[in-house]
Length: 103
Image (tube, rainbow, N blue to C red):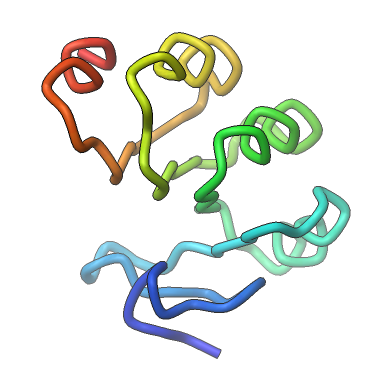
C-alpha cells in the first residue's frame, strides 16, 4: 500500500516522498523484514526511531539510502551520523541545535 507520507504509513508500507520516488517505511520491523523489499529493488528506507535505524543500518546493504523521519534529539545527532554513514536525509529536525549538529 502506498500512502502520502510517514505519518500516515503503517508498518512496512511504501510511501511517496514528494515525487522523488518512493521510500519504504520499515517502522518497528526487524531487519530481516527489509530484505524482501530490498530484493524487489527498493533502495530508499525510512525509519522513525533512532534505536531502530542504528540497529538495522549495519545489517543491511550499504547502497541503501536511509531517511530518518522521526524527531531527532540533539543528543542523538552524533550517534546517527556515526552509526548510519549512508544516511541520506533527516526529516525530523525540530531545533537549531540539532540542525547545527548535522551540518
